[in-house]
Length: 116
Image 1 (tube, rainbow, N blue to C red):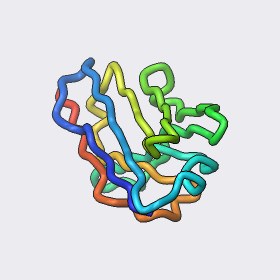
Image 2 (cartoon, rainbow, N blue to C red; image 1 turned 180 degrees about the horizontal axis):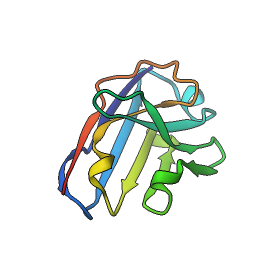
Image 3 (cartoon, rainbow, N blue to C red; image 1 turned 45 degrees about the vertical axis):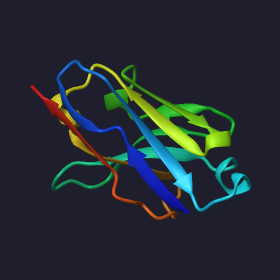
């Protein structure tokens, strides 16, 4: 399975971005049962899991993004989304998606830069 994240960019603090992550090379039955997550990695820091959506649609977030980020998925399109509002400079990072086991190919991710 290959994962392609997109939608990043440069935004001012308080702004919004919507990230997408499409899974290719897989069949529907591989993607839809998986709990999926959005991860981010800032320079010099470890990768952090910030949002999870289960196969049934239940969502969970790390405290630092609760109330600002929303994760969703479209199984027919094999795509996971991350709506990011009220962005802060500390949200600056490369963003990737993967299943919660992290055992699919990570891909390049998409860079989000939030200026103050």
